[in-house]
Image 1 (cartoon, rainbow, N blue to C red):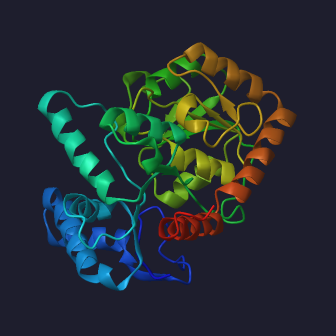
Image 2 (image 1 turned 180 degrees about the horizontal axis):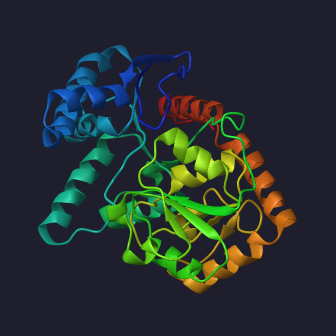
Length: 336
């Protein structure tokens, strides 16, 4: 089996691919290079076009293709013209969060259905995303496969502490208004790492400390030092937010509360590896925070379970083994 492999953004660049995978480069490096060469609004289109042409030229020598999200133009080419098609596993897609309307919806559906025709399978990061994409774009459910976000964060680098604050962070599709309402009047400090423009005015008073945009190392150290990690996320979206943050927290052995249960349920089991509460419900979020803040034994038990689960299921070795398994299945459909 010979697989041409364009390494996705969410996989560390120092990770060696499986033995049968021929590295084509990493999409993080390509994104940076094209961003330096072209204006921002053109760079991604140029990158996707470049990768599509490269893959079309080289695919005859290989049995299968694996790419990250920048392989979507290649998948669309295979969808438009099936001659010479190879099984294509499309990883790390970042399809729109929100529903479009009118002609934009029609155009988006046509484009994404063409991508799906040219791809053998499309990775999603949560089971709920597969349902959302299938329903919204009219794509068969079996086209989607859940491969969990993977991380090998070392607890030795970011040692967990039972600090005196709650941590929350991230910029995409956070519901900080609900978090601010939940912690208003609670006798505990809350640290939020997010751009100021992403925060409602309610986050600029009381017991909330605004950290702004942090470098990755600083973000993870703040997360690791918190007594609780709380993510308040938007609901009703096509793509489920917050995955990288709460999987990183699990890996570092933190007790987590998330109020977007549809997506988070693919990673967290309520009451076993974390706590899930309903979205946009400040009272439910406040109740969960108060209970766990004062219960050290329960908090530590959930944190330990979360870390064990992440070590077993969300590591890089497991992810790469899944890629090999899927490529083998694409080339041998009769195999179990």
